[in-house]
Length: 545
Image (cartoon, rainbow, N blue to C red; front, side, top):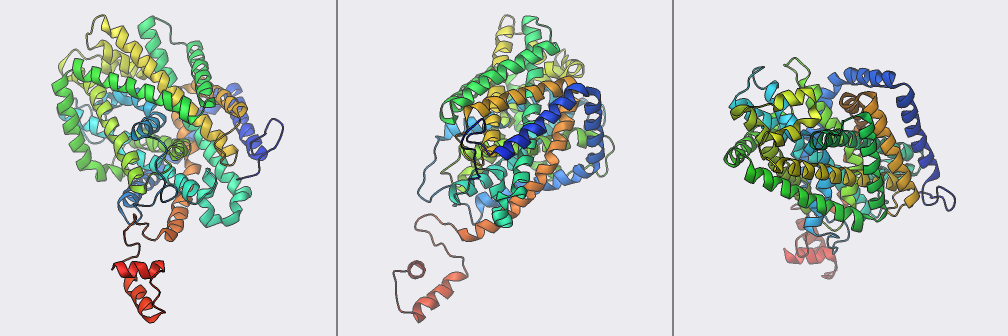
């Protein structure tokens, strides 16, 4: 554990780290508030300058993480437990999945579940420009699954697994820097370790701000369409303040109470929304397009994972893949740490299969139903969703609901979705404040309520500044830029984990042989040539052969 202040305002926190982080965010707030146009222009210029490099760098990094996680979940270390060998998981499977999905992609997937398939339907490099037919619809769904599927969750699962491994198995504090201890040694306690954690805070802050910004825009659009409240900047500020107030109150109550209960509530609300779309929408078409697009996604996964825009013109790669991989990377410190916090006691295999496959399956179903409904309206009904997306992307979901011709049920369903967006915003925000304060305390998960409240306020202010500075485009540019420094830390975490795993050998389950295929013969010779002691672990392993 890093040194914590024993009294005063920073009691329970690392004073130096906290001061630097607060100062860093204060500079961003002042710059964005008083130099709004300049801030937006600077972020856009930085994004444009970085794009050619990120088009292949992010692709290569995310592709490697996917294969690495599959190997960790199925290879020689699959039975390593995130904790002591006899530990059991802290949370039930249902609570675990509810929390990791709510904190991970709940807000983003609601925002993009209609907008992205519609935009991809109109323009992507894999179909002829302007093509709007059934084949284009399948490709649009496939691309949407890709940006929200297993590749993105490979990022989250890797960061979460590394943090859980070093914290619960290696008994290190739950913070980013200690994942690099196999490489840096005791230097993790010095300035280099401080820099690693500050980069994680930096990425976390902008990742949360982007998530909150998108959700607030969508909630405002919903309030306007359902209740006639003008979607003004003032309304967005009110929504931000309300969300952060509730989020701060829930996170003060702790993970086991407030965060868990809210996660389970929005999980059940999500199931209700999914059943509604399936039963009252074009059921046969939704099932068919989801199944067909899933097969198309699986068949093209390898190709899409390494698509770098080398032979295509246009900005599709930068607008979509670079943005989404940057967003996932910026999210990964806080979502990864939150996932680690709730995953104690699970094996590598349980962790990888759960974090990679379950959220991906949920994502496919969600996008298949909501995006499929919008595409059905464009292909076989009067349409209107495409026009709505280009006019105001945040209104796409509610325009789709209105297009289902549900009569008096329309405002009821739209209200349910507004509440669902709000609960996902709250769970994302309280997970983020919990993780930020954990990092700044040096790994202490029981951080002072005062600092959780402080960071809730600061995140709300930053979200407001970014929205006022330019909305969606500024949010995208900020998160892509913020993710790049942390991606370097991810490379260090890969090396640190692989070095640390050497001590695990084969980490077999009880009763399994723990030695590699080449080693038992040498052990057997040692036993035969030695004193005949059969009580040593090495002799016992040989006897089992």
